[in-house]
Image (cartoon, rainbow, N blue to C red; front, side):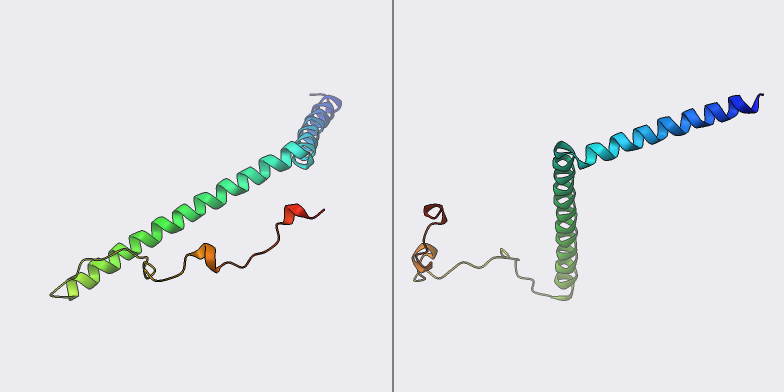
Length: 105
């Protein structure tokens, strides 16, 4: 084969590769590209949080089973949250009156 033809093909391939890379980089720096990246980041964070939550639930069930196996008189597990006493003030009354930020320029 002719060495000039080989260099021509190699140069053309490098040019196409560089063109595609430059186009992708330009898209990533454009506003729609940044929005897409932010959306992908949010999706990744939500997926990670779901995985952590599932792992925590699995570990809690495993620990509960191990504790139940050691306890001859197991008690049923209740909800993880506790309720506020009936005489507690509602949260709306406890919040201080702050000016609304929309009223300010």
